[in-house]
Image 1 (spheres, rainbow, N blue to C red):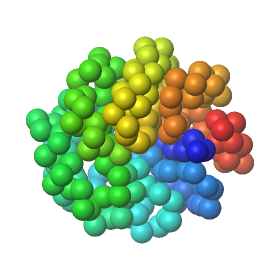
Image 2 (cartoon, helix red, strand yellow; image 1 turned 30 degrees about the vertical axis):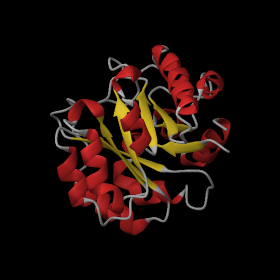
Image 3 (cartoon, rainbow, N blue to C red; image 1 turned 180 degrees about the vertical axis):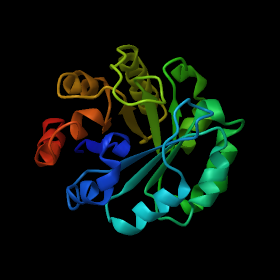
Image 4 (spheres, rainbow, N blue to C red; image 1 turned 120 degrees about the vertical axis):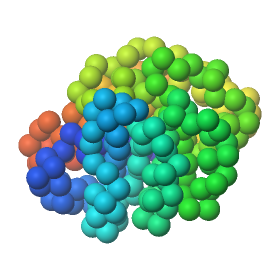
Length: 217
């Protein structure tokens, strides 16, 4: 299976967002990663539900919403009819993640859970892993783009691969934070099959975006 590359529009030119997104139309094995921050669960504030709705109407690219918010169930309820391909909420923001997944299972093709750098894989129970389509390992502290990759995330992915095999599951392992062509080989070898990249792709001329995506493959 080819790795999925998920450009994070957190790093794109927001005043030209529609044209930025169009560059990726038709690219196989590509999701568009939407970092939704509330200024509470994480210190930064990005875009909210109305912007996500507009993006969903403007593109056919699979949309991958990453909720860095204190009230994930509210956002999941508000966005349930947007046709999002994946929605991920943080383990640290949920009192009962299994109940949340079951509540919204019929509205989303894929539901994931994310863990911060300080949260161990052992905090994801077997029962929770059995409900998940995706586990997102944060390799930077969530909240801001442009941070450096944290090496400790590699062991987390290796542990997730081991547990996935032991439980005979098939959830995706997504990695987010500081991903570039400098570390992509070791990241993929550790088990990542879905790579989020923001600054590495968008801090270039638009003519280079697709080349940067390809370099991660």
